[in-house]
Length: 477
Image (tube, rainbow, N blue to C red; front, side, top):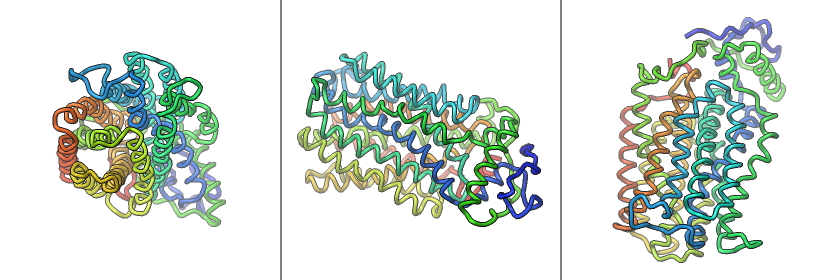
């Protein structure tokens, strides 16, 4: 791969003890940065943008009982693909996510991480607001699909953005921190649903208020956009060396001032190629094996992850819990969401990424099987928390992992492609879970989830490469 053509004569005086110690490569200069406040602030700002996406992604579960209560939807339908069933609402969400990740995520490789980050957030906010004002199942499904397109693009862009802005020794913790912030959206939406869904403030159904609040993400997007720079790795790959140098100098100056001493010397490493990438490159070694592995992984992880996360209140109702108590129990379970990433911050850079994914999937399978046999509220909530912790650790692991497997020039496109399989799978999982629940009960639902987690463990455990503490382009070289 070609090295980045950045002129070292323009390097920041804060970037090292002397120009002779500095490699001109953007990867080397980023990877030697210590974890100062300036680096963490960039991660935090991106995670705030992602907070609204997670709010939107997870309100599917918590407004479900309200949609049924209002008479717009039914819990199950006589036909497998019934458009008025709650499964159709879940499917519309993930159909939009599939379109966004499969067809449009590559825009971040073409137009830049910052531009797509902004546009996709505005897109989803507007569509969500319109959805909240609809009164029929088909109309809600349509606007839910449109909103999902924006969310799908945004989530891939944020993952790509974070992986490229942080040094290699910080990637695991950075993704854990992003998820820590993002997952606080889950108890927030669960609390609002518990509070508002049973009510009709100002004559509007409570579920509409929960959705409208989530659409307010557009209000903060401009403030975030002004403070987050474009990815210097992407700029370098595009051949825009002067802009990459400007971003790096500003970041190095802030980090050096906070670090209080010269930055560590940059170690020569593989740098992003300035050649353009074609989609067919995904099917060439070494990416072909990785793409197939991640396609299989995403196909099955979505059934396990969203099979529980998107159906918590409904599964509890099916076990005999009232709607009001179901939302209360769901809120208690939802509060545990940020604790998985908190654990991840402590272990994500200490344990190999693929190992974390396999152990998390095992936890979902074991705790899910136990959940299906319980009737005690205390045990349901305890096991629900354990499933949630396992699910969030799985999410922390694989969101970092799949961005590490592909080069800068096609990172967003490749991640969007493999990640889109999870959206396609999750879209049909809504119907699959509804079918299993109708014919086999909660036990049937968790049998499906456990089988999916076994496939996840096999795919990553056997075929997944190691990535911890390795330079992004070395992994993909």
